[in-house]
Image (cartoon, rainbow, N blue to C red; front, side, top):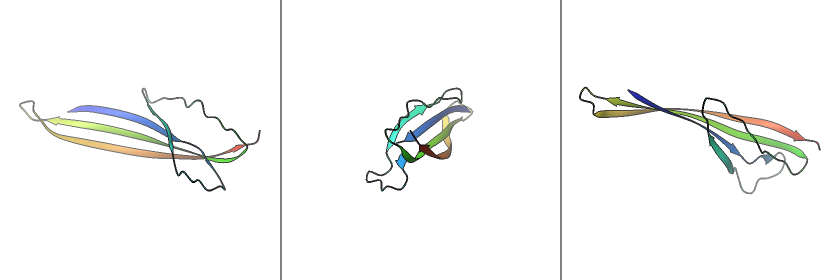
Length: 92
């Protein structure tokens, strides 16, 4: 078998708690993660209040299986997703 793995970190624009969000959930950016470590930077809040930070980590492994003559005969994809929700309070 030959394995191919990608880990992607998706994060969304923070949602202000207590206000209706007219635009819905909007993806801000995504990062391919190498070495299972990453740094989240450049998150800025322009006003005070309570916000909900939302993110998702997707871990995907693709297995290629080959028969005895070296011809690929099947592919299996295993996918795990973890959601992150964190309330953030901006006071200044």
